[in-house]
Image (cartoon, rainbow, N blue to C red; front, side, top):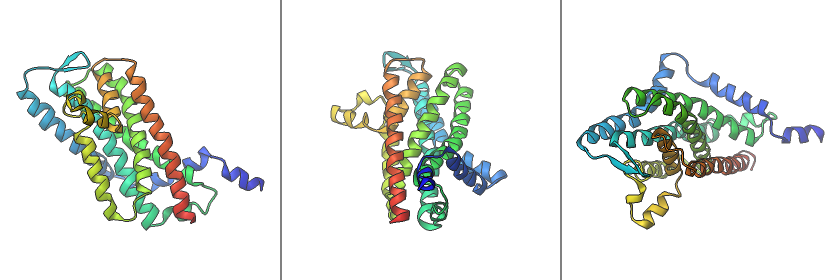
Length: 267
């Protein structure tokens, strides 16, 4: 009974073992770096084509939260938030679903003392490790493109990592609800909608009031607001609300994902 009680408690050591398993399973060499760089391509292309390309046609600065900012400076932080979302989802959606439903990796893992909540935490940590690389590289690109200063980029880095963690937990929870690969069409559609309508390319205040209220309930909106405000040097108290939203989403989705993993594997 004592052994079962100990096994029932959360163990960081067991979670770390799952993270190490994921690290060993990851390909090494040039192909691994190509996989990492591939995740940067889409948001970076949007930044170059829309932020800088279309932005060059917009001579007037955008008024955002009382600050006048150029269009590239407005869009770039949103692309960083999008990169965080893409990095997280790439690990905790398709890849996790394959391990959970197809290759049955976690049926074998959960025969050991590892518990579902430790699997959930490990997957989010592993996603955060990879996402940190994505966000770091994207911030370097932003600095080189002169859309953010080095100082504010350093402060925006932990905010982008928080966004990765939140989206990793959200992606993990969503993946446990997927019955098959066809269900990911809905997830991809939702991801695209978040990308387009979370204050990414224009201030959310420009939307009709009902749409604005809906947008402000979404996680990408809060990630964009958090990172954008930091990048322009606006350290308003509202940042605490944006960060708190992402922390709460992480906690709730982790608990939900752990319960779903337990149901899928044991029931």
